[in-house]
Length: 342
Image (cartoon, rainbow, N blue to C red; front, side):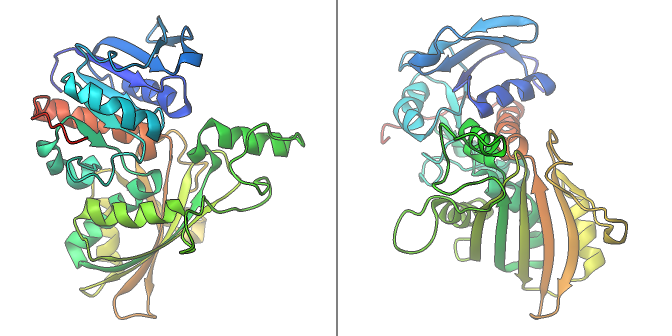
């Protein structure tokens, strides 16, 4: 990695993902020279320790990004829409974890193992995909390259931390038989499963629409048939996905296992007779995407099943954002043409 030290800002530094971003920056030894921690007015003055030093959180404003090289945003969609353009106009590269910019035609939507080439055309804002999308496309990319994807059916098993601290607080309160002060669903989440937010009368949730659209965009397969059902389950961390695929070319199980295990960022754990398969608890704190339960589906001509698990706060959010930043350093891709259409 380039040894030049960079000025890095974290917008939303006091949140669950923001704090994880700080951990990942340290673990990856990212070349941080100066660090700015930003958040809303109510968090101003909060002290956060990083690499033995104490940093005071500042208010996120339009003037926060002068002389900043990279800003990792996890302050919510509204804040990203308001402040990311100001950061980019200041010459700062924004890597945004919200859904605000993911489908904007001038903003690349990036998973480094899958489509890092799209970073060469950024205009100062880069979108981090949805947590469930990230682990899905990492598993699908080598399959498409080897066999050609025809159809993908995915059902998610998503932890409450995907909804941030509010989700964790909701679940822990109910487990402790307390009334939650904040909720992620009108239904109980403890000892239950619930769905994400419904946005119209189509019957699909916002999360399901995100996964479908983002998967097509990242894989550059706009006509890929993708069927998604997203479910929130009562665990604190980690997302699992049951994935069924149909391909253009015949699938051979050993070949499928071989191409997945050789793909960067994937770890295969697939020994069912010894009860060896990835679980959300097991992958906690890991940066890779774990795949197991590989099976041929003989109900279609070329079909297979796989089980995909990742830490949603790490690979599903903070780690992917830092990996994008690392790729920018590797490509020396900090200069960009500013646009004014945002």
